[in-house]
Image (cartoon, rainbow, N blue to C red; front, side, top):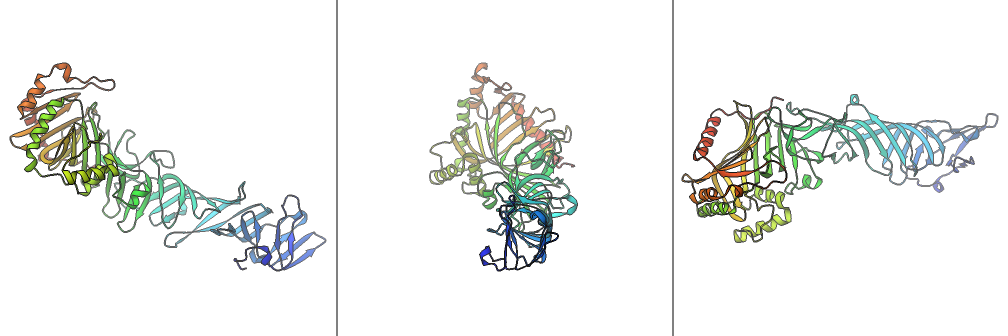
Length: 535
């Protein structure tokens, strides 16, 4: 039978038309037929096809039998093309009952072809027109069927064909294929259309598995163990674990890099765009994340805003590169004195690289791409920002931090700590844009009384130390003007008026506190324990 024949006017032979009131003038052509007048049976031969609703049904060997009262015998080993306009779908080995011009019920086999044209058979248990006479086919794929969208995604669940859509709809669970032992696997529940040549799995923000249990796509922090672990379509270890960096949107696989990737569609195409992004390398079993970061800290009135990237080497360590704004209640006069002191090093300290990929991407995350482009132009032309964005006008804006995560062997508490120089962008609106020796440390404690320490040392004789513990920000510096400004403030001027959350105040620290901090860090560095999780 020539599938290019589009209408009945092109066909030869008698036209059989049903006059049954419920068959809507169903018709087909049959070049030959045999009538049994005693049993009221018509055996039609060489029937090319029967158009029903939007579908075209091809009888096996062209044979159609009609019984009394216009009942058409069940067609077996038939074929369905749906629909007659788009011709997107062919279903074979069909068993079909035709009830009228707009109604039929069938089942059959569908051949799914992946991007490499590898075939997998899908059984549609129910094929029939919907209320607008569009053919809909539904079926189930069991886990034992070992169905795969391609070599990188397996699937189990329900499948749906809509004749007017080129691609199938899948509602069930998908699992990625990899050999990374530290990345646990779960079947991610999803519902969406799949293009075999360009697979994009929708990833909702609050992903779950087939049983409704949470699935994580993130580098995580465990509140119970204080360890860092990674999950990529993985079950959550602990109910209260915190996401350090996560991603949602769509999941795909890049064969060239051998990476699974999650982000929005735009960033999957152009990674320089802002937005959260997560990838899992199946080659070296490392996780990479970028975008907005949460260090899982509970610092009360001290507000952190972090953007950047991180790579978690699952068997070893984590490397984090951040821009960080730190904002808290403090005396502006003291901060200006600090800024003035640090600006002295404009000609000696290394300058911020405004053209680096890290800086441009990070700034775009903080203020938006268009605003970031304008700011970078201003910085390159004038060395300063003309109109300061609110997102950067904070107590401190650190524009380059390299951190790792460790666990204290004695108490089991974890902490993020910087490695190498500290890039300081500005203090309030006072621009610095220089790199200094220093340490920034954020402690994660099991009792959830988190702490932050900031130490800057432009030279051995110039330093600033901030220590926040239990609602108290204690500070000390080599700068006498800075120290005296704090000391001279009345107690009421050092306490924040808080409407919500824990109290906050700042005060001058014991001169030895800085030395104790540096000494304790040196001790911990002598016997470091990386953050690797046992899970």
